Length: 392
Image (cartoon, rainbow, N blue to C red; front, side, top):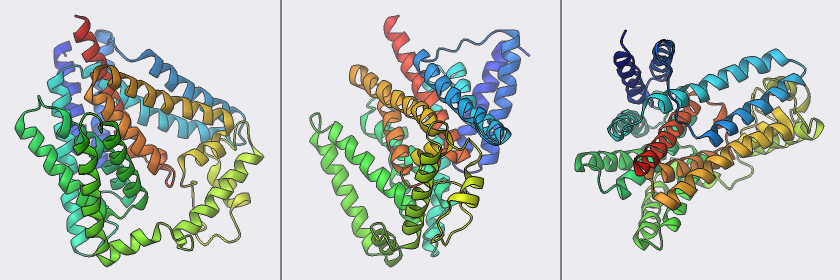
């Protein structure tokens, strides 16, 4: 097979991933595995040039190094090896494929359009479920949290291009606008309160960033949130979900508080390296579960930060914070200097994901993690592509 054919095959498979990214996650994942096979063949025939941000690569390496330290000092290291290998392919695989093979503006745009179409299809199904009384609509996913993970990433990203990309053809801006509207309704019917808060705060923050340049952004976001609030408060089931956000006696809330307390105790007992990746569930069930807990089969802490502290201790937590801190810092810095839309897009996506991660362990969701690192690859590749074009 010729190099050109392999390049086109990888790109086509990545496009295929994008087209199924929010609908059938098995098809999306299989597309990445096939793309990996083509990439390996390509690399043997002609080495692939990865123009990745070296500081980001170091941050990823540090993240996995701290995970390895946690595994070495855990009681059951093989559990950690398996989970870390799985996490490696969810994070590194989509990132490397995109950075290695997606370099042209039209490719970025086509993939973003394909992801928008995929989300639109999932949105319509979720809205259909909502109209038939399912106010925890999951669309094609096995759990509402997965659909929420797609929405809280794609809504900020599409909004950036819809509002700011004046060079975008009208048909694409129209598509992004329609998908944004439909996604907002789907998010309401999805009923994931943490995602509601994360998206609302992220969009509000985006408005604050642009208030000097155009105050209409902020006022527009506030007006949009008010309209959504009015709709939600007039639908009894949605209003009940909103009211429950601050109700500490609501079972989902009280259970989370108990789980957070248990995870914190786990960290206090194992502050340096944690109980070890893959050992949280066993430690929780056998030693740390609260006697007041009604939900007895929880396998994670429902909080990214507490999960990492309990799993990996302060060493792993520093690796986690450094990785996501660098992504936020570098993307915001790039946007400040160049106004690159992929830079502010991935900044907002990361903020949204981390905000929801305060109430949910979304870092442990395979499909959500895979989408995030696919977007990370797109954004850093697009930033590098713009930088190279400016140099030339």
